Length: 173
Image 1 (tube, rainbow, N blue to C red):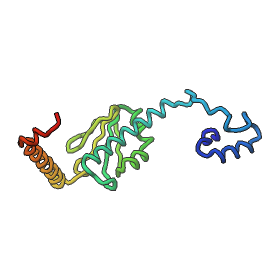
Image 2: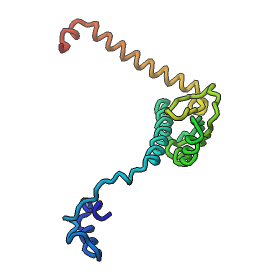
Image 3: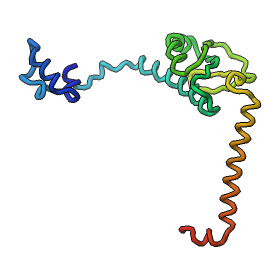
Image 4: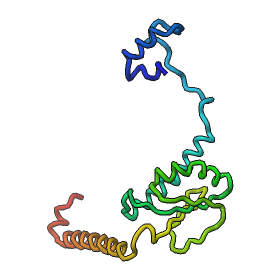
């Protein structure tokens, strides 16, 4: 640990090194840096974290697409491919709920009704989010109409500029 910390706090680690009864070298500055070892890689833990990250990322992407505040919590159902995936996600339930800012998480391996749900697949599970909990349809319609009008105005502006001969002639080729 001292060797890993030495580049960041050299004076402290050197002082601690000098107080150790057993040392490999006289100074921590000339002691060999710890080498990478494959035995410390836990593929199962890596897979678990990647799966949890995929679920959280999907939920956050849905939140971002609908411009939802992080404080807005909603219900999520995850339909896992098999019992193993379901057990894994169950063991990470509190982390997923906290990182994705959701109110409740249901885990199942049975197929679920997707009517009125935003659904997506992350490879090992389907994630279902009730649309009525995410947004008010009338508000979403207003937001999308506003976005459409803004893009239409930009398109009309660009079209007007391109219709002018002088603009096109001055454009770099």
